[in-house]
Length: 232
Ligand code: CA
Image (cartoon, rainbow, N blue to C red; front, top):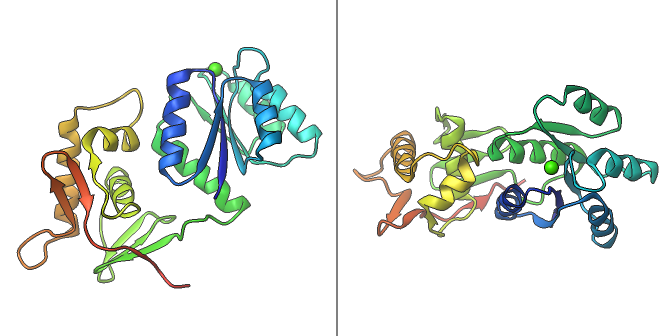
């Protein structure tokens, strides 16, 4: 299992990142400062570190500097605040693999994490999934029905990805909001319904109904059909 260390001193953001990354199938450790980050990484080596720049005692630069000094090439995704342009450049100069400026979208962070991992090591999860008439190419953000490419927005694809990677599991609207929308721009749960309705329309009907995504007693949504990895 791919292991990620989140280093972020803002508890709500730290929790949000840990939850979302766990949901994506990563194992996650989360700490709030530089020293515990180095200790945790030494105890349980991470495949990637999400590293906040501004930390209470030992900042992200120092953590990164120490890692690289130790010839530790663990991929690092640096989080910076707005207006730290020079910091950003310095971060890359020190050997961060990528950076994101706060406030960022969790969607975007997950996409970046996966992109870095694809560059550095293969993903544990098969990237192409098959279900009924559908083929989902997750790295390429492509969904096809019987070979025909579906015109999905990134948000719709993200909702679809959440559902198809956990077939048979019901996701509440609140959970979908947390996983598919930005932390600080949460729309009403009704918005989830609207996006799911559009997604269903684009997936298309079969025998007069839409059997792919079911509404579960007003609780949330579930992908119904079995999902398999595409044979290599
Ligand atoms: Ca911080």
